[in-house]
Image 1 (cartoon, rainbow, N blue to C red):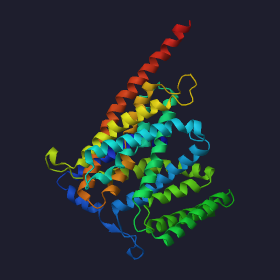
Image 2: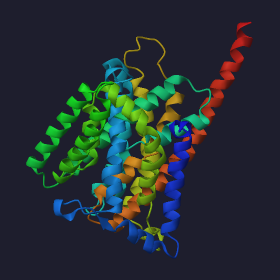
Image 3: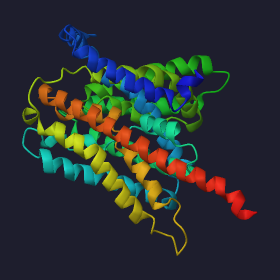
Image 4: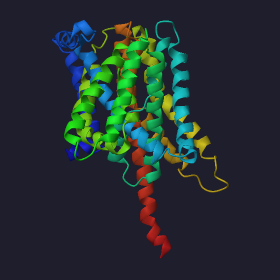
Length: 388
């Protein structure tokens, strides 16, 4: 279990699962595997007859977003985002990492068929980014990790808002109201739990959480937002305990399964100029847009509140964090399917764009992280000599 709680191994699992899905989808029997992912199961009478891929994206990913929301709640109250002074710099950098990729995407793919994909290159995959940082960043100042973590969490908030605002259709206020009541009930139950009633309360909380997910899904809001709501309202101590218990399952099962199903895409047998502009927009916007946006806005943020002193993070140390921000992966894959839900062919090409753009960012960030880490190791090694 400790391996699944680490930062390196889950990144390998994610990459391996995505690679496996892409390879299998393009073997001679790939069509059969893709067809299996579209098989529908579940009670049709209550509107839950979903395909396997939808169960993964809607239910399993809601558990992932629950963990994200619990971490966000902690960071907002006790962590790196619990004051304006702490949050302002990564928030400004995150804004650049959203605005510039959107501009680049729309410059390439602003047409009526592909323009709706602009939210896709705005996401940052926390697990992947921290995994690469852990692999290559020995010697980097702790401020780089803190900056990256805060940046990625703010990115997730933006992604959650995009999902809530842009991809809600035919809102059913009655179902939503019932779902919200159940979320409130979940919050109350988390606050009455104790050692004496734990055996009874925990199963009840799980049942209430599942019921909330069902009603929020039926309301027309994307079901992953149920996980967000539950993670934000749970009592913090119980939430952190739940996140700790779920972490190996999220890292070792939920995210790799989602990556596998998302990457079940047949590579189009067409020339490069016949590929959708959405693919090219994402391939450029993820690595280039994130690098430029986070670096530029992050550099500007270092002038806030300095009063002539040194910034918390050096300009050149922002570069590896910015490159890591281009690893969109999990949330970008979800946004690809949502943005082009009515056009499966463009959605598949958008998924390929996410995989290619994230891979470019991964390679680039590995180089930049290694370069800056080596620089800081040399500085650390020279300090005793200069002080003697």
